Image 1 (cartoon, helix red, strand yellow):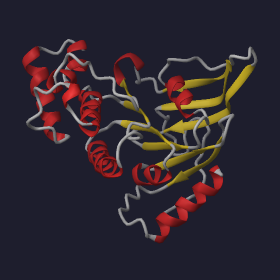
Image 2 (cartoon, one colour; image 1 turned 180 degrees about the vertical axis):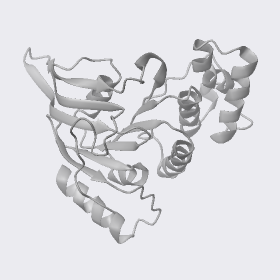
Image 3 (tube, helix red, strand yellow; image 1 turned 90 degrees about the vertical axis):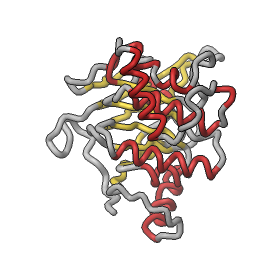
Image 4 (cartoon, one colour; image 1 turned 90 degrees about the horizontal axis):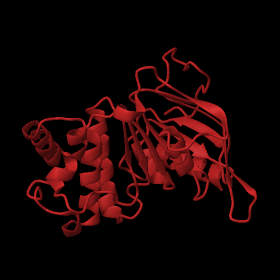
Length: 261
């Protein structure tokens, strides 16, 4: 496993244009005291296409702010964000939040089909696609259940399936497993790894859980405490070790923990 820093210049180290590129991004907000609060400071980051990038850092380090910037929900105070010419944020991006955003009046089937419906896919076709995703995330038998009838893990399975059903080029995930118990979290991590491996989706995943960041990532971006800065970018060579006593895994865990401390 390589832990060397990644090239954050534009274009990327491999000569390929990154899917998303943040260049010298600063983000400030007006605090309730009437003073400027600096959330992000001089963030330079390249997100390669078809990668799984985790952003790990302490609470309040600007990780969610970064996702909102990438999604186009915020505009940077200074610096710029560049997108691949073939990336259309309106049609190619999906966002999964920590708190469930399913429509409570729609069943699992209809929630998963919702994005396809917005894209004008005919009813029979979108329901057929939704049923395929129900099978892929292990929700068979719950097609007609409503969100309030599901466990937290099942609701997140539905949210993941809803996001991936539209086959986004870029999937943003903001601590989507943070409120789940350890067993459910581990199970959904493996589901997400398998789903991403079989797709061309790029995932930018925010977490404060170092173990989760290592388990999921092709590369890890370590954020400082407020204001959020990139402390390190670590290539993990797709390590998906389930053995938490593995020396490489443990050494990397300690390295990241020491950076964040």
